Structures are given as C-alpha cells and as structure tokens.
Image 1 (cartoon, rainbow, N blue to C red):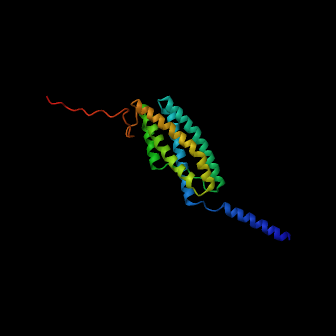
Image 2: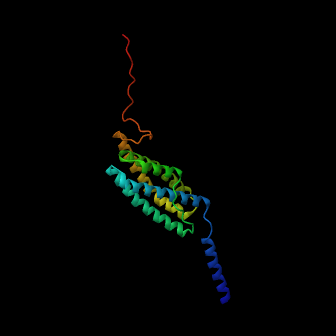
Image 3: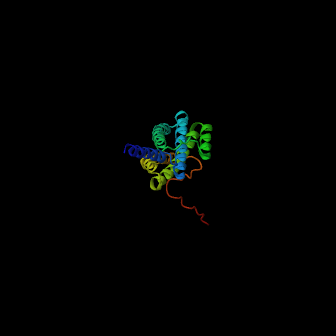
Amino acid sequence: MRMLVSAAAALVIAGSAALAQQKAPAETTAFARKVAGANAFEIQSSQLAQDRAQSGEVKSFAKQMITDHTKIGEDFKSLVQSANIPLPPGRLDAKQKAALLKLKKAKGPAFDRAYVSAQLAGHKQAVALVGKYAKSGRTPQFKELAQKTLPTLEQHLSEITELSNRAVAAGKAPTGTGSRAIGPPAEPQTRHKR
C-alpha cells in the first residue's frame, strides 16, 4: 500500500513538473517579447525626457511613465517567471531604436515635440497590442495581466493625446503628425470682376 501511495505521489509531482515545463504558446511568447520591448522603450525614452525636456508638463509625464512602466515591468517579470517562460530581454524593435536615436539627437523644444510624438505612437501601439491580448489571449495568466494593465495604458494614451493636442493648439505641434487648424475652414476668396 505504501508503495502504491508513493508511486501515486511521484506521478503527481512528475506531472506537475511536466506541466510547469510545457512551452507557452508562440502567441504568448511573441506577446511577452513585444511587451518587454515596448516597456523598455517607455522607460528609456522617459529617462531621457527627465534630463532633456523643456516643458514641465513633459517632464511630469515622463516621471509618471517611469513609475508606471517600472511597476508594469515588475508585474510582467514576475508573471513570466511563474509561467516558466524565459524572460524576454526587453530589446527595442527597429522603430523603437530609431525613435530613441532621434530623441538622443534632439535638443530643446525639438526634443519635447519628438518625445510627445514617440509617446503618442508608442501608446497607440501598446493599447492595441495589450487590448487584443486582453480580449483573445490564450494564456490565462497573461490575459489577466493584459486586462489589469490596459486601463493604465489607456490613461497614458489619453494624457499624451491631451498633451499633444495642447501643443497643436499652441502652435507647437510635432511636425508630421497631422496637426490641424482649429476652427472652421476658411471661406474661399473669390475675385469680383468690375
């Protein structure tokens, strides 16, 4: 009898270990890699903004990004480790590298514009990525983290959109972002013949 109980216990332990060592779906691994890269970009670009931004609003936003994305990164790292997935290195993709390089070269008000533009684009992508996984992700723990993180990212997107819109209204819009004039379109001028 003891032998039977010992054998059953060994099977349960072996089964648990095998379950913990199962590979995560490719979708989850890709999601984890993208989240790690996006989070690294948010922190690195915001650290630059803390040093280089001219606007107090931009510096304040950057400080909040460092705080929030550091927390998101800690939660993410803990989840990845508990899911037995190798921790993604937080490498920036080509677009993120280019944006960070542009920020490193920018100075003064041009830095503020480039930072706001990069944050706007980054948070649009992050909300889309995390929102999609929150709805249809296949790994329950990651889906739960996505659902928990999404409201924070949406708040960031709202704040950076508002900051960008204030820059547009003040005539300091980032170039190439589709800023528009405020007010109705001008009436076309017609020439009167005499």
